[in-house]
Length: 158
Ligand code: ZN
Image (cartoon, rainbow, N blue to C red; front, side, top):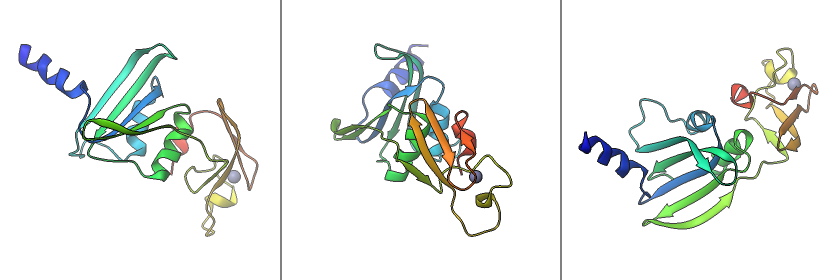
């Protein structure tokens, strides 16, 4: 029993190198993993903390990914489902960079338009384009057909 507890404690201590994504809205950690392409086949060391008490927001989720620094497009995707999340880049056990995700004003090729007959959902060589009308709460609108997206953003990730 004691051994197991120690293992868990090791996993939640600060990581040596990698990325800590903090202040994820409670319930969105698994969608963050999805964006990062992390599934049961992943061999990287990942820590997921869900429903952690937060002074700022009540409850939050935290994702720690060892030995990986996120790409800009991954951060942009995270901003869609976790506005206000902070990215901490860790090298040699120190936070070398820390910033809050910022949603772009136009989201290109990341989310599918919910309207099945939208031109961006046909075989035309057109990338989806969603205009950001509001960042928090998130409100998006398709550039082509004006279809809005305001909830379940993760369901529309390409
Ligand atoms: Zn559309």
